[in-house]
Length: 118
Length: 115
Image (cartoon, rainbow over all chains, first blue to last red; front, side, top):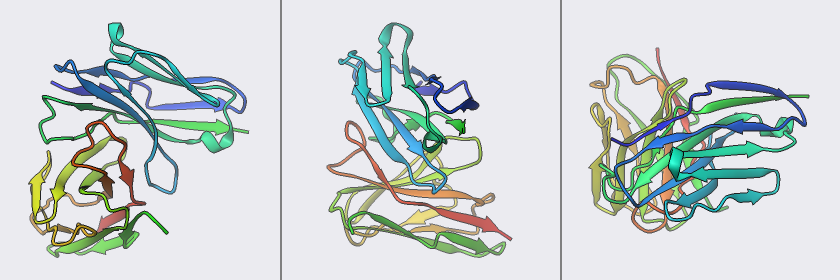
């Protein structure tokens, strides 16, 4: 069955530290999509990245980088030189092409709450 | 201003009452979704609609109802049959027909509390 596990419930770092948020997924499908969303205190989810199962290239966007490894079913997210504005809950999510249940459903992990202290 | 508008931001409901949460979008997206978020939990799908006048149950539809009479609007009614409705409700939209391979856009949510 499809599942997303974010084992880190809460992480607290001091500004300028690097931090990695872990995401491990389970899927029966060969075609699937992985996402990261940020939920600031205001509540709405903000899209950060999408990766399909055929593209294992790592991606860097400014201070953000993502490491996708199919061999370990992981899609980890690293913030370099963290800032107070990075404080939020971060969700990893999975969508399957052929076994999505409710079509197009995003399966979310439980989220990791990141607190960056000045 | 383009986007998704959820209202109200905070809602209080008495036991046994039905309440309706509003979700309006001007992004011209076909698909709309309702998710429920509980503390320390991920988001769980309640209902979704990929086209006007059609909607499907998600994983936790019991005690909820929806309608999709207009492309722009996807209201969610929390009925008295929902035993534990206190939660944060998020509406989302997606271009095309599904969240499958494109990003979803989220509203700012409605926090519902049963008093």
